[in-house]
Every structure is written in C-alpha cells, then in structure tokens.
Amino acid sequence: MNSRELGAWGEEQAAAYLRRKGYTIVEQNYVCRFGEIDLIARRRGVIAFVEVKLRKNAAFAAAREFVTYAKQQRIRKSASLWLSFHACELQPRFDVIEIYAPAGTDSRRPTVNHLEDAFS
Image (cartoon, rainbow, N blue to C red):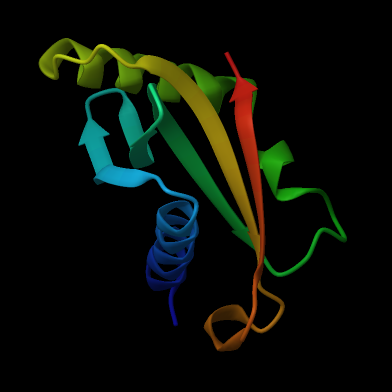
C-alpha cells in the first residue's frame, strides 16, 4: 500500500472516530492554493479544522510533533479561505488527531488520540 492510500485509510479512521464522538464531517481533503485540510467537522458550536497524523508508533516522536509551525500556518490560511467561502457562525478550532497503527491498515484497533485546540 502506498503512502497516499495509507493516509486515506488514516483519515477514514479519524472521520469514523469523530462521528462516534458526535461530530458531523463537513468536508474531507479540502484543498486550496494554501494547502490542504484533512477534515473539517462541526459539533456543539465549534467548527474544527483537523490535521490527521498516522504513524506506526511514537518511538521516534509523537505524531503531533510532525505538525510543524509551517504546517500550522498553511492550515490557518486554508481555514481562513474556507471560512471566507462558507458562511459560518461557529467558533473555529484547530485539532490534531494522532493515529498509531502498528500493523498499518491491518491494525485491528489503532490507537486514536484527539488533541482539541492543538494550536491557535
């Protein structure tokens, strides 16, 4: 399985997790000139712009550590553009979902960590 397919699998795992937590997925893989937002979800007065990071384990570093300052800047700009095209009264928030899947897509129960308001 190539990295694109693995990434799509991770994003599906994250979307399923959010749905179980009562979120509504508004958009997946929003792409604009500034970058990409993996998931856009809403729940209880919040619109969450979610970056998904998939790793086999945290031996080298936690998955969240790969959401660098430069990546955060691209997500912020992309979210601003999305908001400019979508009338939204909800409070924006930036979340990170870490997924640890030791066996890749064969992982029966990947570990999912949801970091709400991970950066501002």
